[in-house]
Length: 243
Image (cartoon, rainbow, N blue to C red):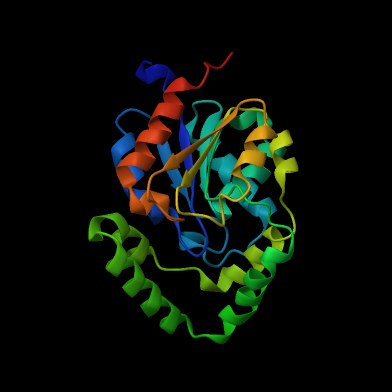
């Protein structure tokens, strides 16, 4: 692959985070690929923008267009994975490949009840308290260089009820049938909940495969940044040329 035909890559963050979630991946990949990470509506620099999947789709599409290299590989984690599935449905011509990370579980069914409960409780806790708890959690579990950009960018707790409220009840394996590009389902081995449907998601698409990151949990790109980045790199290199 030459620089001229390197696959552009757009990274889409998970719940409450921002583009800062991908700082390690951007630094590792930018010498080979055109890369960018977006802030979803209500998150990061778009904190004041109301959440909606429609707006999320438009943001991803704008990022693809801004790279100006044709259809892109979109890498979405958790909430960002489901937003990326919505993008794949509405903008198939802009998608060259899709990495679903921690987003291969149907968001329908009784198992979502605790998440609906959490979404209702979040506004009852002060943002300062939630921020302190998240900062301590990330700093205790991960090296500073992995999470500092995420901590510095802050958290979008205020957007969580609307984001989860729209995503929960919306997605199942049927969403994979709208994806017209190859798919890598990239999960942490120990992310039991969000990889629960990975086999079904893979079977629902003719060009999907599953790859697990050993010992990693839901935040697999924090648990093993090198392995996560390498999986994305290998998948990007294998994508068919455009045209």
